[in-house]
Every structure is written in structure tokens, then in C-alpha cells.
Length: 515
Image (cartoon, rainbow, N blue to C red; front, side, top):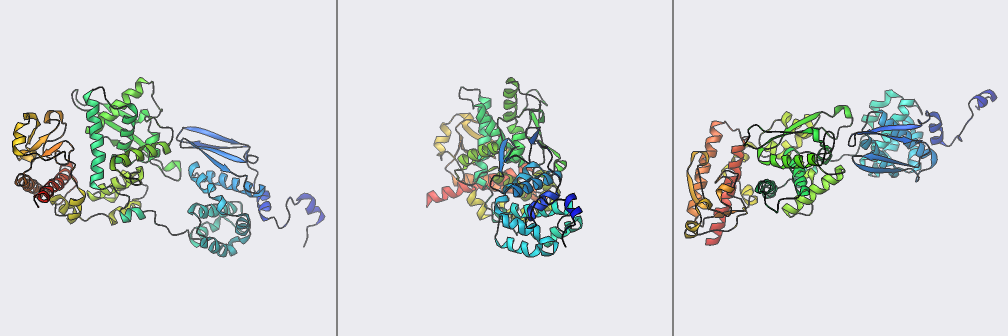
């Protein structure tokens, strides 16, 4: 039945009966003259003026400009997508999340959008099945669901808010394993690669303290500081780039001791800003001079308050510089991103015996279930003890030593006294294991336990000597395990684990030379 003349005058049709998208756009409220969104990276509220007539949205997100081009779509199609974008922002989604969904819009042709709108609650399952066959990106499927929820909000084409649960459960998203790299172990740095990162940070601190003409540049210190954040705290590039001067607190507990450094940053990758809680971390005392030096330099430049602590303009730049540095240190072309360091830090914490709650707090996860995958791939306690005792063949193979060269006993006696290594680690007097190219007074680390694996260590060419040291260290590990009832989380225990593995590597090299 057609409309009466009176109905036709009161409600004129702007679009033909077969123009489904046009009808939907006509039924929706007009877009506001200005769409505003907040970019927490710049701490600025941005505006999109005349969104209905604008062909391209240029969005300031995390220090970069993201362009959403609507010129490839028909007018009503583009207008509908703009309504979806506004709807997502109204659902308190972060602008970067909303933009990611809109960027996937080209995967959906005009015919696809018409089928989705025309289907209604009864026919949407068949349409969804056809879309699933095409294996589009996950964001494209989420965009479809956002469009359906927009129709629910305005009660169009038979949809209403009562269908919200139906959209969630009856239209399954593609199955994907976001942690495939974690399960396979491809994203973890090995012991040797972690040692390279630690050595670099140690050497940067020593270079800062040496006060020589070849002191590291501010850019090198900045890169080392960002690497520290990713390695020690599993911080994401966005968290590193957003770190402000006011969020770095430095003070001296003792006049002659190293500074104490605390960092405060917010949880990232939360769908809404309301879930972004602050996290506070303490920098290792050994590496605190890196932050103290960079903080002093930034203050001389007049940088204070909310200004960036690191000299990076975006999260992308922070992640890129970290990856370049790590790949240079470990000699890899693919492994070494900030995400790889984050996964490695998480697995390191789990292997040390952290609980689910401790891991979630460390990573800044809203739910403890998110980190369960690390426990699935973690070694058991027995394996951790085997590593500490040096009984794990796999651990012994990857813990390669980076020593300078072997020296003979007569060469050791010719070294200066300060270059001959001696110490009393854990109450055990040990001497004559080798020499140091720098000398013990110039080294800030514990003698013996920190020597094995150091690039400046010159091991003695005496297998019996190193076997005696190995036996002594194993006795300490056994004592730790028995007295603490299996607690393998103490820093001293973990250092012994690494030291024993590196002592064994020295012994194996000596055995290889004797064959």
C-alpha cells in the first residue's frame, strides 16, 4: 500500500526505495558540526570540523597523523561510516581503536554493506557466514558488528538493544591465536641475547661514570633508557614515548650511593581511558645513573612538567629505535622488538615463580587470564632447579660465554694484582680463576659471580680450577633450594643460575681444546 498524499507531504522520501543505505542515513540524526576526540599522547583535545562534508579525516594519534580516506566510497556509504566512527567514540573507545576499525572499511564493498543492512536480525547469520568465508582482517568483522550495534541503538531495520548479546554470541569472530609466537617460543630472547642487552646497559653506566672524552651521546643514553624500560619493565612503546618529566622521580638515599629512580606510567591497550590505571616501577640501582644523566640533561634544556622525558615524537619512533638497538646488539634481523622484550620479561617473571596476580600487575593487564599463556610455556620448578644446577643441556648450550681469551698460569702471575680476580662469593674464598682486562677496582660488580660471561674476563686455562669453582657454586645452589623450600625468585639465586651455566661453558671449551 502506498503512502497517502498527506503522508507524502509530511514525510517526503529523500532516497529511492532500493537505496537501503540512503534510507538508513536519512533515519539517523545529522552528524554534529564538530566531532571532538582526545589524544592522550599530546594531552590535547582535537576537532574534526564539518565531518559530514570532509573527505578525509586526519587524526592525531600517538604522535602521528592517521588518515581515513572516504573518497573511495559513495556519498551515503561514506556518511554511514562516519556515523559508525562517531558511534564508536560515543561508546568510550579510544580514538586509535575506532580508527583501526574504520581503516578496515575497504574490505567491505558497497554490496556487502547493503546486504548487512538489509538482512535484519533474521537474515544476518547467512550474511555473516558468507563474510567469514572471505577471511578478512579481524578489524573488518568488528566494524560490521559496530554497524549492527549502531542500527540497534537507533532501532532501525528491525534491530534493537535487546539484540546486543545476540550480536556477540551468534556472530563469532575468526579464531586466532594472538600468542602463537609465545607458544612456539619464537618471540623470546635467549640467555645469550639477554646477556648482550644487560652488558650494553652495564657498559653505558660505566661509560657515564668514566667521565672520558668519548662519553656516550645524549641520543645513545636516550636509546639505552628506552631499552631499559622495555627490558626491565616490559613497557610498550606508547608507554615509553609518553613518559613525562614529572613521572620520573629521582633522589639520593645516601650522598655516595647511586640514585633511586621511580617511574610512573599508565596501563596501555585498554579499550577505554577509564581503565588506564597508573603503574609505578623502580629502576635497578645499577642502571639508575642512565636516568639520572638523561634527567639532568633534559633539565638543562629547560624541559619540565608534562614534557616528554625521552626525545621521541611518537610511539612508532620509540619502538623503531629500540628494535634497531637490540638487533644490533644480538645480531638479528627480526627478533628484538619492544614486544619481544615484553614477552621475554613476562616469561622471565613466570619462570622465577610469579603468581598470576603478580604477572598481571607487572604487565598492566586488566584480567589475570590474559597472561595464562606464559604459564603454559614455562618450565616447571624441577627444570628451574636443573638450570641452576647446570643439569639442563638446553640451558647450557644457549648460555655461551663471551670471554676475551684463555690465559696460562704463568701469564696470570705476570698480571697486576688488581687484574687478578679474587673474591669471597657467598662466604667461599675463590682466587686464581683468571684475569680482568680492566681490573677489579674499576668494576662495579661482584667478583667471581659476575666475571664468568663478562667480555673482559680472561679465564685461566685450567679445567680443574673451574671445576672446583663449579662444585662450590652448586653447593650454594643446593643450600638455597633446601633452605628456601624451592623459592627460586631471589636475585642471588638467579645470578648463581647464570654463573654456573657460564662456568660450565668455560669447562666445555677447555675440554674441546683438549680433544
